[in-house]
Length: 113
Image (cartoon, rainbow, N blue to C red):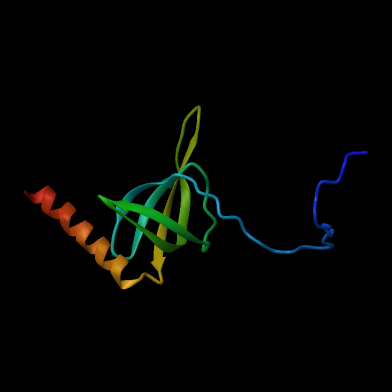
């Protein structure tokens, strides 16, 4: 019989005890606005699920909370399935909204000049 190395007893849960997992996975931001983004992932995203997304805005990174508005298969090849999802930002702090606005302005200015 294997030695029990746990310091505390585990109890079996009868029925279901709900929870969720936070797993860091890479995403590609394809479109960005003040209020949301379109992203590409290698996994499907559940509609209406809330996630935190870290987005690199040039030299600055921000973390935004977003709700998945839609998700669909974008491309399929022999090695992978690529999903596109629309994310609506929620509870955006003012400083993050300002950072996104500055980044978008800089991108626009770079394309014009």
